[in-house]
Amino acid sequence: MIHLSRNNLRATFLIGFVLAIAVLAGLATPLAKTQTSGDITALSHEAFSQISEVYRVGGQAPELVAKLNAALDLIGQARLRRSQGDETGAAQLEQQARVEILDIMNEVPSAHQKAQRDSATKTFQIIGSIPLVVVLSTCIFYAGLRTWRWYEKTKLFEMRIIEKKKD
Image (cartoon, rainbow, N blue to C red; front, side, top):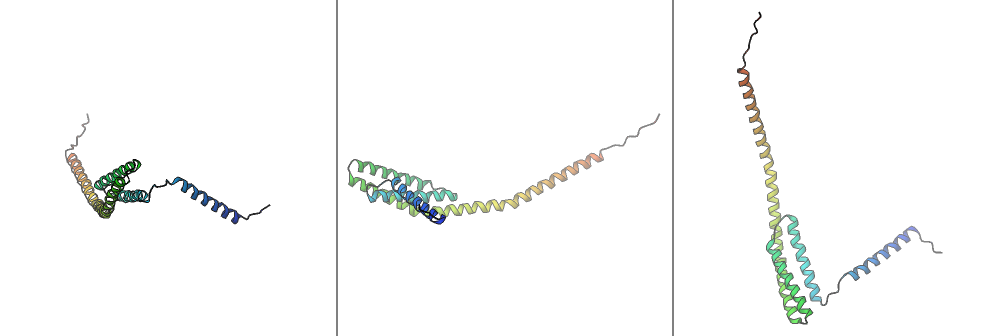
C-alpha cells in the first residue's frame, strides 16, 4: 500500500491535469498542410485582434475591416486552388493576402491612436459640459422661482378685503 502525502497527491494531480490539457490541445489543434498556410492564418488572426482592439477603444475602422475581408477571401480562394492541386496559384493568392494583411497591420496603429484621441476628446466634452448644465439648470430654476414670486405678488395686490355687515 502506497501512502501519499497531501502535497504529493496535489503534485501528481496537477501533473496529470497539465498532461491531459496538453494532449487535448494537441488533438484539438488542426494540422496545417504547409507552414505557409498556417502562417497566413495566424497572421489574419493577429490582424483581426488588432482591428478588434481599435473597436474596443471606441474607434471605427470600416476600411480596415473591408481590407481584411478581401484578404480572407483571397485566403479562401488559395485554399480552394490548393485543394484542386494548383499549388502555384494558391501560393500567389496567399502572397497577395499576406501583403494585404501586413498593410492592414501597418495601418492599425494610426487607427488605434485616432480612436484613443477621439475617445479622449469625447470624454473631455462630456466632462466640460457638466458645469454648463449645472449653471444653466440653476439659472432656469431661479428664473422660474422669480417668475412664480412675481405672480404670487401680483395676485396678492389684487386681493380685496370685504367687510361683512351686521344686520
